[in-house]
Image 1 (cartoon, rainbow, N blue to C red):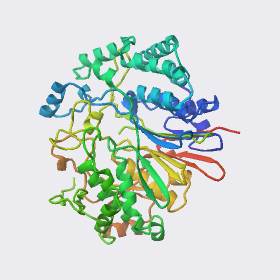
Image 2 (image 1 turned 120 degrees about the horizontal axis):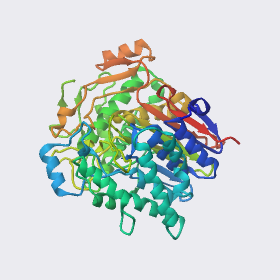
Image 3 (image 1 turned 180 degrees about the vertical axis):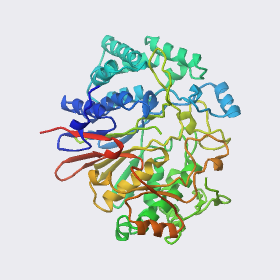
Image 4 (image 1 turned 120 degrees about the vertical axis):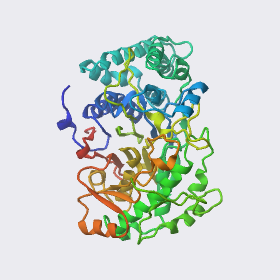
Length: 541
């Protein structure tokens, strides 16, 4: 494959359209789609499909990709649930509850593949192009590739194109026919679905063709919170995303700008707000179609006013402290617990000339050596983001979405889109998104500055990839703070004095891309951290 990284670069400026994502050739696929008259949805679908090849391992066609989109026609932000579900079989759920959710490449850890239906739903609802057009660049990559699964997946995609071409009706109906071929829905040719099911059975998995046929990409209202005149949008509690909104609600009560960028106070207050928000994430979040998550209460003024005083500017918290939004109590009784110390994802943001914006976070955590079967569909491990704790909001159930870490971000100001952020990095994704948001909102940084600026993260939370039913045993390192070694040594020393367990990190902390739209000039600025091999490109003219 030709290396286009020198032509694509890591930052771009355009008034017509721009893409920032992982692999350079995936970025090129997205930009080419914009150049051919496609909109942000068409470009995002082309980029996401190409990422399944360029960034395979970090994502795959059997993986997942949550999406946020601002549609300029409806002037609304929507969440697209590109997340597969647990098996529908109650016998399978019983097995998980008795034996746990396996890892180590066991296919029982894989959810229903969701990428294909996410892309076709994106095209049907918001795009203008055919499936054949958006998948063309991916087929070029597959035909040039030499992995065993490349020709098999190319054959699967071409069979989907065949169904699209043979279908009658509107563009949307033809795109649906392509999706139906993959998922084996009623009335569709069932060869692809049969091949996928046969592979699952051969490998000892629980998923079946009925799970494929039942899959759909839900289009949902996002969760949002205001922060200093900006409205920050996240996918719902089937992701970890809303805790970013919770952290921002807490931080709005502090003069972050007055603290000074990259000061000890700046890093300390972010860390302490994140700890409180993540404690609530771990206690309450799950698929809202299965559990009642008190999101309104968690984001309310009353709740955040009683939680905010738990942030002590002089000392780092060494506790996991979920609150009680039902009783409007700062701490849930018996839950202020001292605990001993102890991925694979990629990125995509797109904006077009018509004002549409997409933020997506494709993933799969594909283990080395995974097979793909005749259909070329490799698989991930996302069922491990569920657990087997009876009564827990994220306990595995038939057809339930895992509470995943994948968490794109869209930001509006004055009812117009201004920022899109996507971060790879598991539990660090929204931590780094918080760094970038404050870099821009409180300190005026543009994407090319923010993605390369010093940042921090913590493992002071439960591990989202450990399904251990004894949840406190999944807790990371109490009070930890991994911080860029470019931060002044005096600042790091002061953070240590406050009780943070500071570790200076050489190199990048997580993997961000960021896009900004200047509301006055219409200029789109996009960038990806070059230290993590992120890429960006924009249209000329």
